[in-house]
Length: 481
Image (cartoon, rainbow, N blue to C red; front, side, top):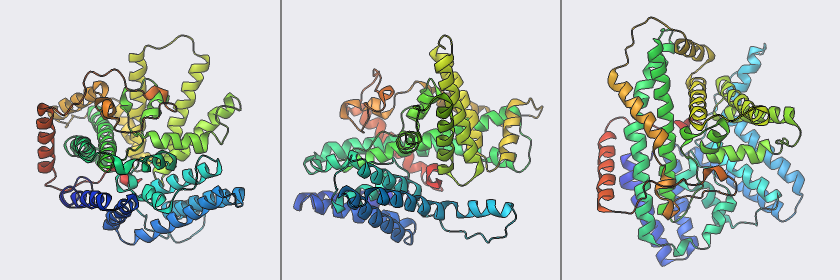
């Protein structure tokens, strides 16, 4: 079930909200949690019921291991077994064909298992690895079973994040039953509609522009340079508004139930360096890679050369997390190289680069990287990059209206405030200022206040989305990761 579907908006969401608040009113907090857990499992089962036992098995095993670690039972062996089991679990479902395919290239002739990939396995596996490590580090007390299951399965973040940490959600359980109904639902609904608009009205439009061009280049067609740039910028905008829209919708949905998730998307195309970009793009994945991979590898504590190696290794694995393909690994290594280059400039560079120039250089580097990310193989990526940077005297077929839309959307991403700035007074999400000092809300040019004009604007966006959803409902790009 997609957030951008009639079934979700008119059936699942109203029923799950009504059941949650009815249970909260007539029973205790655990009754409301139980109702939401059942709703979340039903939401997950809608995709494919066969995936549910896999999810439940993962939850039961990780909860048992985490509980034993908190109680001091064989802590180091258990954390080692727990992390390895989670990674093996993920590798079997997500990377079996890829790994066996690489072995076959070396001369073996093993059959590919074609294991069905359970939805959201990358997200809930990483979430539970973080839980086990936090238990081992003494950062968590033993959570109740219902709270643990709720945190893992809560449907707003289950499918595509943010990657939730138990220690951020557990403190909210103490007060969630007392939180106001109307304000949370109204605020959450507005944020949800804004995210829906980004997905339906903007991201899907740019997907219709970029997909044919990438498919054409992959089939061997030589694209005009202008068309190659247009297709790449269209995908750059598609993935931005698609993921931004999903992140907003997840924040809004969770707020309707009285919970705040961690910030996950903060105007990344406004970044002034590649390090700043990764503090803004998929924030919860970036901090997971930092806290549970980069820092354990040694971080920046073992000299410059080892720091650069750690950055490359971390980003390569981050790329592989996105998909079982060498193009994703190459995309991760590309960003690791950029991060190492940024650190090298920071340590040895003379003078500072003006923010406007630095932001433009960062954006261009990110755009080039998206070609690797979007392409199915290196040949397609090379052909697209060659078309972008080699003048090819082929007539452009991208219409002027498309370019006007691209320019308008780019300006929007560069200058517009995000929902965390617009709704700053309502604290819509957890902005981790102590961990991400560069993500403080900037001075606001505008602040939402539930006025009549604002209500009309949100209503118009909703109606436009409902009309736009009449055709084929598209999935979110991050569902495939």
